[in-house]
Length: 472
Image (cartoon, rainbow, N blue to C red; front, side, top):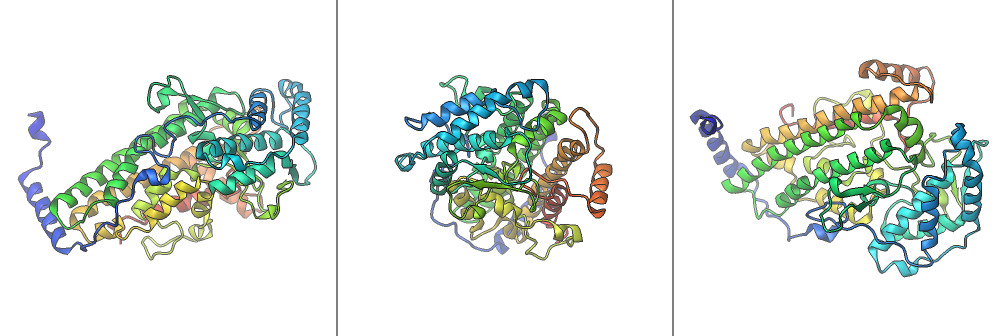
């Protein structure tokens, strides 16, 4: 009886069969391009954007940087922290920063033959930059000078990797682990976080939750890759497979939503906002009129991308957006029409965040964006694919609704609190308060990269909803 109950009714079966037949008659006869492999873009079929093995240690003389990072972890405190424990660490912090400033500038040319060593150098140097900047006690509004001993090599390796010369999502999540058992494959159960700023379990759990979401997304990458390499979409077998994969995609997105939701039981909002998030802030975190950072010894330093790490730098989520045809730039005429707030949001945010990804991963996204048969167009012209496509889109829209609630709890609410206080956050009330404060001339709540958080998240959610076919 249980088996029979999951079979479609005769009417449903006939309806689906007719839909498939219509699809084979009307779907554009587009052939897939020459076979392209995930490995061409430094993407692993089993671990996705994670390297299958941890990054190697740096050789001499670059191990000087790695040793200093090991000293900083647990040895430095936030410059703005005035607790007794933090003040007790300030003398060491000053000595540590003086040592960093005294180092010679080490040429990185010899690292360029090994991609993984370059990635390790970027990670270590980026963490050093953020430890250096954020351990400085409060000062006037003059720019913070990042010493050339770490600024120059960081910019050099970043240019080879095609990634921003600052701490990124890759540095804090994708590359920030070592295996518990080197004989077992990559998984969050077999993953030990390597570097922490705050030393708290909350920070460790935040990175692991992000890693869990990324690894759950590996199956999405396989689905996207399979679609890109289908010989054609004119036969019943191919259309049926795409329909099944879109349904599966919606389930994976729901799983990622559950993973994101789990952060509430693992990371304290107050600890996140006051003890962890501050370390990630980049040069423009205080807005366009903030003092910013100066990279000593680097030409055209004002043109560098120096925002901090952000969930917006997740290549898995960008790949999903591109595959489903989410129009964050509002370039397509879709319904419902964008609101004035949508139009006021930073439409270039997603493109800008790609500059903070490893270059190879960005190339993968460009490859997806250049697909000759976008899934949304195919679904629009293929009756059997419209419903499963919309199901996947609405699952992503619900994920972004959830992300808004999480951001409200962990950022918007906490921005109205004090370091020693904890507060709740009804979403609608907090968003209304945020918009009211903006209207009154008070500064907006910003993400670690300096973006206006409320506008950005609402625009992303609404752009996702606008991709659904049933209203278009």
